[in-house]
Length: 260
Image (cartoon, rainbow, N blue to C red; front, side, top):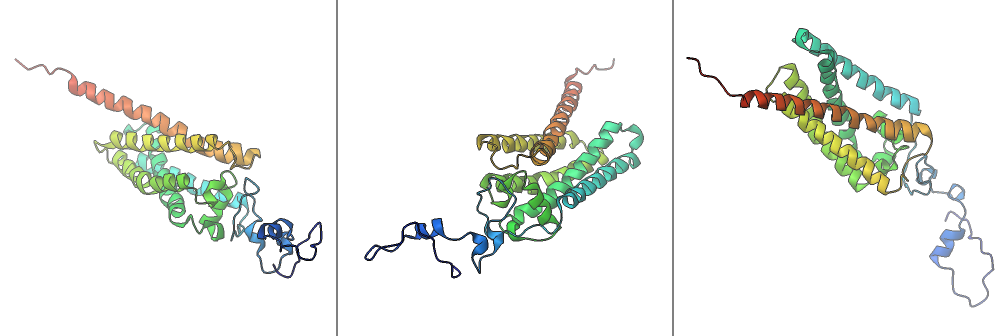
């Protein structure tokens, strides 16, 4: 215990049994007063505040830098997808379709790199350093399940990284080259993203919304706002894919008139 003696409300009398381990834990000095124990084991910004997080190392970067890096990378991929959509047959593509191209390219990057990192490093994340680790530590203020290797979160992000990430890139290529499977891929990816996000919100709702810092930036900005984008956009793309596939099926079902 680093030399600190447990404080007892009633000094032990002769012949009394030794204090139990729980007694020492209850009355031992604060962690910051015990030598040889790193403050990083409990001093963290996550909710609930009693969350045990041994080995935690604080981020090296302020939150605005982490959020700014992700926003800049996402905007860059979105713009690249838009530009490529205009360069290859862009004259016949609507602005909405070019924006969808940018969306799928951005999703490929976010799912494959950011969520791929989490899938591989979730156990080491609390002690990890570096840009990607700091990004997740910043987001974890909105959902501390990301720094505790929560089973559902790890499973969901693993599927997202290794299924929806590559499929998002294939969808981008399919639209760029006008491949006949493009709307099938759009439907598949959008449905998977929407389903995962609904489960993500539902599991936290059942837990009583206990893992998020209640301040507006983290709960409404990060947790609700960022994840809400992956409900609204995939929902709209899912409807778009269903309409396009239904129109193709109607054309295929239309009776063919034989020429005389």
